[in-house]
Length: 419
Ligand SMILES: Cc1cc2nc3c(=O)[nH]c(=O)nc-3n(C[C@H](O)[C@H](O)[C@H](O)COP(=O)(O)OP(=O)(O)OC[C@H]3O[C@@H](n4cnc5c(N)ncnc54)[C@H](O)[C@@H]3O)c2cc1C
Image 1 (cartoon, rainbow, N blue to C red):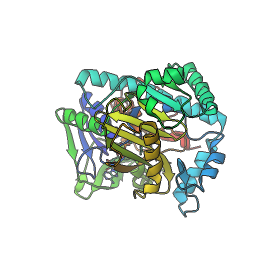
Image 2 (cartoon, protein in one colour; image 1 turned 180 degrees about the horizontal axis):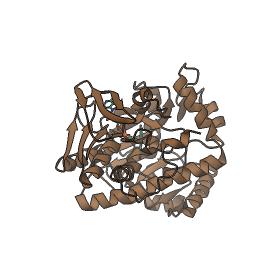
Image 3 (cartoon, rainbow, N blue to C red; image 1 turned 120 degrees about the vertical axis):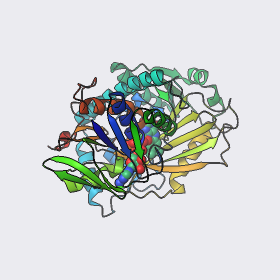
Image 4 (cartoon, helix red, strand yellow; image 1 turned 90 degrees about the horizontal axis):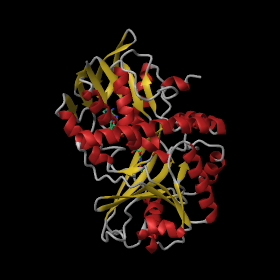
């Protein structure tokens, strides 16, 4: 079967690879000149099933309201903007802020993340993939005792779901990560999540794309998708600025652009961009830089070593499709990283970056079929697209091939929003 994969981010590339492994002819279409140039370019680098707690939770509306008046807040919503998409998304988000929804959404996201980690490991072994990965786990660090207590509670809860977690006092934390001894802020303890991993999503996508090209995958770059051509409840082609492209099946991996391109088909896709920022700096002292990826829970910042670079990422801003890099939003990330690892990197040589996370109101990706027989979705991975990429790609490839996926897709499809 010929399958068109729309979008060459980490989700599209993973989908194309999985499809090619099942023997399909695949064409990947992207407006950029190469793979992973948008949200998958410089993310936090964590492969982290322990980060699957959804944004929508009972305490969040109150917290988000307080943050609305703080320019450098970790989550900034600009609700006074006249943006019907934001209001519609926001109402759906609020509807998910109950304990019952939060628990159900957590289970769904965790299901995808756990499955995906297994698929990543299998692909890594089979293909010998190298993408500046580490497999020694992540460390959550806490700056005060209340936060640490909350962190231990979360760790115990994750333990109930089968994720191994180790609660650490300050001494144990420093033993796990000696570079934290340089921290200029008080640290009271941490949680080690040994199963989580890290790696460079951009490098991974490039590497996988090269392998895929040997297996009947063609990439059509610098090609903007403009519209879908339909006939009798199926897609017959896509119109691009480089002409029409047709295939037997189509997979949408277009992240935050998904709603705008699918709206003319009558499909209401609840994805809204949540802009995030990262900085990347050259490591100047290997011993002073962390060996494991760090999540600073009080500052909502993740810090990951990618070979000889230090990457730090965080913040979320719900303010439309604007990709402008605002230094005010980046500065808390730099400050948090510097306060934990003051001697690790050359902070005068920062590569700043921002990207649009494709956020759903329930923090669960949209994976599966549509009302069009040959149109499939693999999109809306929000904060965890790198974590979920391989598993999502494999599941959609199985679905298109008429195979039963190894993961239960119940509750992950677009139909969950139809009520
Ligand atoms: C600051 C930050 C930190 C993050 N940290 C982590 C982390 O530590 N771990 C983790 O798991 N996730 C993380 N994420 C989330 C993760 O990066 C995303 O979920 C993931 O990159 C989404 O991948 P994607 O392929 O869906 O999107 P993208 O990489 O954006 O790919 C979509 C592709 O579609 C193409 N496209 C769009 N419209 C068109 C069109 N009309 N025509 C042709 N092509 C088009 C784009 O060019 C793009 O290449 C982070 C995100 C951010 C912003």
